[in-house]
Length: 272
Image: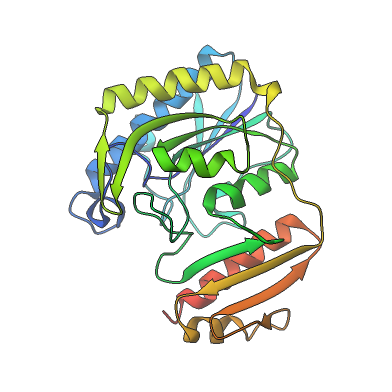
C-alpha cells in the first residue's frame, strides 16, 4: 500500500495557542517537534500494517514545520509553499489511502484553534450546500482520485466533523477542547501510541472506507469576515457577489474548485 499523509499542527496534543502555531511564536519550535513525532507515530503504524511508499505533506502555515532530519527515514517529505494543491500537494491515484494528522475543526465551530485555511479571512465555505472545513475540503481532493481518508487525529470535535464526511473513519482523540485556546491534552507519548495503533488498525481495514465525493457541478459559496475581503475576490470574472460578505462560483471539476478556493483566499489575504 502507498500512503499519503497530510500533517497539520493545531490538532497535535499540547498545541493550544498562536504561540505554538505562528512562525514567530515563542513556542513554535517546540510545537514543530511535537508535530514531527506525531507524524512519526503514524508512519510507524503504517509500516507495521505493511505500507510501502509513504509520502508526508507538511500542511501548516508556511508548510516548513516538520523537522526533516527527525522524520522516519522510510517516509518522503513535501516541504514548502505555495503549492497548487496546498494541504493535499502530492496526492495522486498512485496512493491507496490518505491519513490526516493534527487536524482541527472548521471556522466558527467549538473546536480548539478552529479556522478554515485562514482565520483572518474566511468565515465559512460551502460546496453544494454543505459547509466544510479543512477536513472535508481536503477529503474531497482525495476523493477526486478515488482515495479514502481512513484516519484522522486531533481533538474530540474534529472526529465528529470528519464523520459527517466519512462515517466510519478511524480516529485518535489526543485532546479534548475546553475552548478555542484551551484543551485537556493526553501526554505526548500517549498521543503517539494512539496514533500508531489507530493508523495500523485503519490500514488493516481500509477497504471498508469509501472515498468522500460529490457530484458535479460544484456550487461553491465563500463567506468572508469583512466586505473588503469579498471586494477583492469579486474582481475574478468567474465570481458572483451573493451578499456583502459572500461570493459564489460554479465549476465542474473538483480540483479546479479547490484551487479556486485557495486562490480566492490568497487574494483576500493580500488585503486583510
